[in-house]
Length: 353
Image 1 (tube, rainbow, N blue to C red):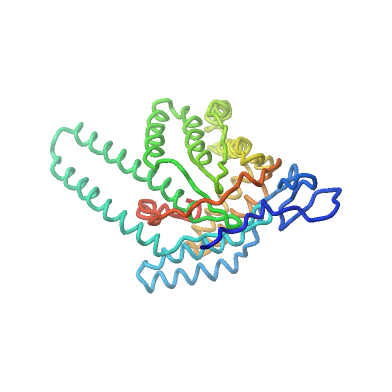
Image 2: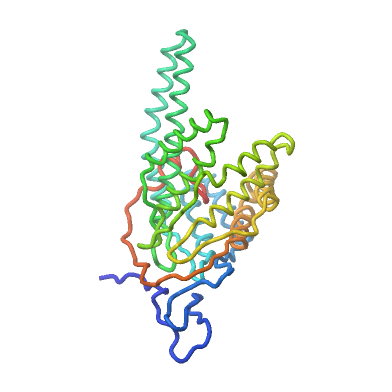
C-alpha cells in the first residue's frame, strides 16, 4: 500500500531547548507547541523561475505546435505549468503540478463534441428565422449570448477545479468544490443585474464569485475562508465610476488595486490571514500594461517574461501572519478528471485560468 506524502507541518520541532522561533524545512514553528506559523508581516510566497529557462520551454512548444498542427499545445501548456509550479514556494515548500497533456486533450475533444451541435443549432435557427420580425432576431441573439456566456463561465470554473485537483503543495492536494453551473448562473444573472444598475451591482457580483472561488478552495482537508462583502467596495466603486471621464479611465487601476487588497485581507487559511498592503493602482497598471505590450509587440514571444513578471508581483506583495494548527491539514484522495473541457475549447485554459 502506498503511503501518503509526509505533511511537513506535522513534523515535530527540533529537539533540545529553544528560546526563539524554530524553522524546519522552511516552515516557522512555535518552540513551545510546535505549531507552524508565519511571522507577522512575512512574505511567505517565493518565486525563483527564470525568464531564460521558461523562454526555452516556450520556443520549443511553439516549434512542436507547428510540427503537430496544434496538437502539442496541450502538452506544452503542461510543461509551462510544471515549471512555474515547481519554482513557486509557500512557507518554504514548493508546489507541484501533476496534470497531463493527455487529460487536457481529452477534455478538449469532449468539449468539441458538446459545442459543435450547439453551434450548428445556432446556425440553422438563424438561417430559418431570416426575414422574420426583427424582434425575433434580437431575441435569438440574446439567447445565444446567454448560452455562450453560461458555457464560458461554467468552463472557466470547471478548469479551475481541474487545475486545483492537479496542484499539490508539499505533497498535499488542493481541491476546488462547487458546481460550475451554479457559478455560471450566478455570473450571468449578476451580469444582467450589473447592466440594469448601470454597473453598480458589479462589486456585489465580484465578491459573490470570490466567495465561491476562494471559499470553496481547500488544501487537503483545510478550507480557505473568504469574508468579503460587496457593500464594502461600493464606495470605492462609486468614486471610480464618477471619475472615469476626468481620469480617462485610469482611475479603475486604483479601484482594482483597492479591490485586490480587500480580497487578500478577507482571505484566511486556518489561523493565517493574508494581506497585500503595498499593492497600488500604479503598480497594477505597470504590471498589466507591461505584460500587454510584451505580448503584443513581440507577438507572444516574450510570454515567459510576462509570466515571470506576474509571479514576481504576487511573491513580492503577498503578506501573511498568524498560526496554523498542523493537525488541520490532512491528505485527500485524488480526483478523476478529463482536462479543462469548455475552457480549452474557448481558449480560456491559460496558465492563470
